[in-house]
Image 1 (tube, helix red, strand yellow):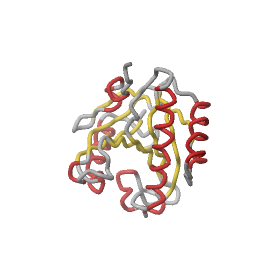
Image 2: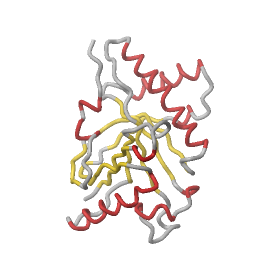
Image 3: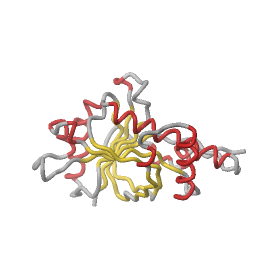
Image 4: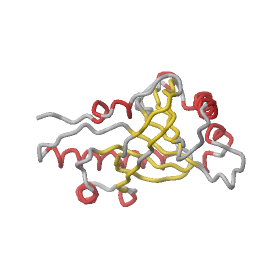
Length: 206
């Protein structure tokens, strides 16, 4: 039985170059959970730990039907209240208190996974173990379309340098923001040396 690997099926979605480039991103669907606050805090970790058991429940549900798939990379959408922090943009987000950062964590799902199946997977997992945030999990769809992206290598603390390159490319090509800052974590940041982290940084534009 073949196992679907979304990182191989959608190579343009899960790969990026070390310099900014313009790409066109296809519609996608996800298991998702929202939150607010410092990503180094326990609530953020708890929400990651809520996503994965349900994602694996979906995997095994479909494996039993001959539709096995690899659980995909963790992703995140990030933003903050730009009225409250006037003049700040995502590349200056280090100046915004981490307690004010908002996020939506994502794991991409194959097209054949339905919203109803997500609800069933949540029920299955919650019957076996206590997951504090399981009720907050959502089925989420997104179509970013035209975007500027690049691969950032290194710790999250140096992301602003890469984001400035993206901003310069965006301005040089007379483009403007058209969505939320998007990160795809190619490395497991819970286990990887920060200097070796690989993260796709993506900004929808118009």
